[in-house]
Image (cartoon, rainbow, N blue to C red; front, side):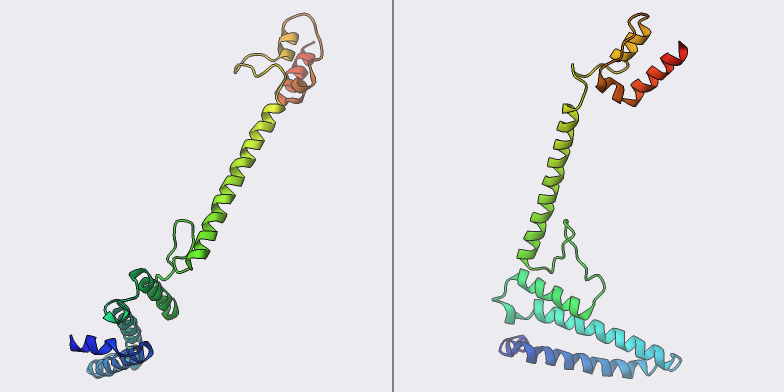
Length: 189
């Protein structure tokens, strides 16, 4: 407990160097322990030690930022943001934390808000374009409103009605289905 109280008065940089020194001592003890494994090759031992040392540094930094009461006046969210930035610096796996809008959690709050606003504006623009599309389709439809599904068009009823062969109005000609019906009727004559 006295160690934690003593660390209250030590500046942040000095505390980090102390933690790195502790990790170096741990690395030396690990070297002595791993040297007992004479069957393990030297390169494999070095690789193991480097990975263990990186894990120890990361663990000590996490402990120093979360547990040491030096950062009592710093709110928890700010501590978590600091930890995320340290994780980015150490290139710890799994550092890419993404929010629902695909934005990094390590970004400042203003950038996250502007990104969310851009996403919302894009969705609103797409919705407005879709509404304009449907309105233009309604305006370009045949005069006299729509017809029931399967009901004959004016051109089909005029041709198959057996009398009064007339050219239908231009919107009825434009539809490919009506043009095909006209071609079949003319071929049958």
